[in-house]
Image 1: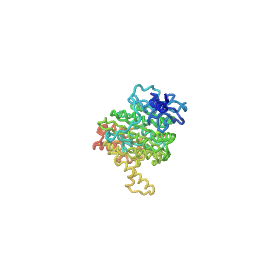
Image 2 (image 1 turned 45 degrees about the vertical axis):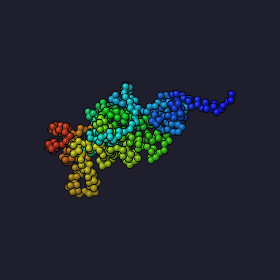
Image 3 (image 1 turned 135 degrees about the horizontal axis):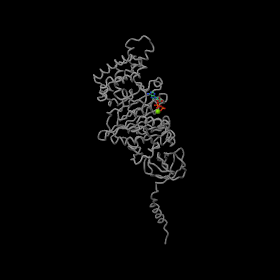
Image 4 (image 1 turned 90 degrees about the vertical axis):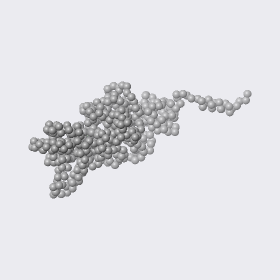
Length: 501
Ligand code: ATP
Ligand code: MG
């Protein structure tokens, strides 16, 4: 028999082609190199971007780069003892976190794992952390206020449910305090709150959890925390996890308030990851997709329309500036993504004007359409009056001879400015804000030295509640300052000042 080489080759080829190691082909790979929590893996040609890979020691890696011959992934819980040559398996899953009411009152890690020592969460549904934001047709513009209980914000920079409002300022200017007050103020308002700590000290998160617990706010809140000691992938994932938890409630028609403290540290964690993945650095060494990192997160916060349940996510991202530089890369990015910003300055903070809100540079682009009538009335023009006060104040420095009208603007402005000073941890009911600001705006307390205004307003409100409880009730119910109420404020303010002397 003649030996036909070509036939043999064809038959061998056929056998090789037909060979399929079921369950292994493209499903199991090997580590080529590992370091700084980043692993290059060979042999997983079917793996997808964002997929979870299973490494030895039950460690998971998140696929971040798909190369021609290898893929790079970030090890979510650190690299441990993984070595070159170790086996890596596909899981065909993306990162998912637990969601639902069982999460309330808990402190969770970046992936929804409980870290408060109160045991497992039990059976909960899960959701993927990344999701496309709701489209235009499913949305509605804001029409319900999201009250923070802070006078200066609710009157001048109002926030609506579904709005994204940035809190920006240098370190130690009271950024976190504003967010905490906003959470505490949601008590009894049917809003669920999520505080997402990114890259903070564990002690700060523990203190914050205590603050919320003491204020009785943990019943409707949860904390997602990726502290600075955690690997960078967890810091990167934490806000998306928190957003997924919020979305679950929003889609059930509920209102959620979510705080990201803070996104500058999130950007830094992502920059670390990107540089380790050898992506090219751009401005300030951040990668090219740094804008998309935050826009795809914050776009998921919105107000859904009635057909989609009418739920909402209000987002309060926090960004830390260096030396008040709001034109740096990350601040400008987040300013352009959000619907306004609350700008805090160290100068005001150190001058004792707390919350240290710069009324000139702070804006809310959509919130005023959600403001109640009473707050609209006292808030309208407040910014302009304060601006004209500041302007006159700087001119008054040059001369001592002031005409009567300038003097009046200065004394009234000083009282108005002082009326916005408020301690942290004491958010106020809307009617209290409206009544007190109305009294100050109408000039009833212009004769009072500005340094006494803060304590005087507290006393006056106690007095008003005793002398005219019906007026307070009326404002609380109707959210309006009717003529009779205004008359009562005028009378009680005069009586109060008379009795006080
Ligand atoms: P960091 O940059 O460290 O995160 P931060 O900007 O978040 O700081 P906070 O931690 O909120 O600032 O506040 C700093 C300090 O100022 C805290 O001790 C807080 O109690 C105090 N503080 C904040 N707001 C007020 C306020 N309205 N009245 C008085 N003290 C305040
Ligand atoms: Mg803070």
